Image 1 (cartoon, rainbow, N blue to C red):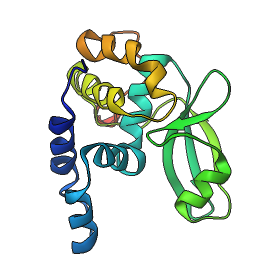
Image 2: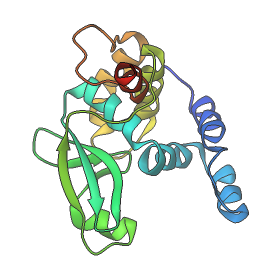
Image 3: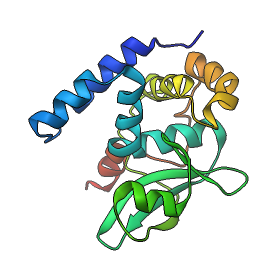
Image 4: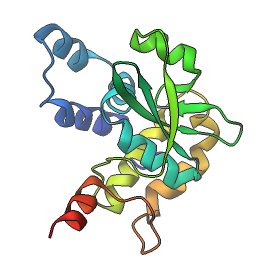
Length: 173
């Protein structure tokens, strides 16, 4: 049984995304979407840094920045077989270009992302959302995700990935 209910996570997605500048029709489509679609939209296009960070914490898969000529698009991870993975599941660079309506995307390894996850509980909630996702590799990762979503600790002294808040605080005089 997943650590968090799909209904709870779907409602949280609406709360988290209320501040977006969506037009009325986009917002109504999002509010009326099934909970799983809300989670994929939340972590697949808006909070990709949070998703990449949490997946990195669960799997140690490296994080990458996906960009187009017009600028940054999203953050994803690279599995042990070199495949790009995000909330939409596995995607090739060509598929990402089509998804974002650009002719070409680049993939650059990154060691930090600008996530806003400020506690172990916040990371566990993202992992809990992953437990519900049905695209590969998430079904195969469910045992690991379930364990970590219930009791994982992610912000120990050896954590090399800082949140944007931690970086901002460290850079202040």
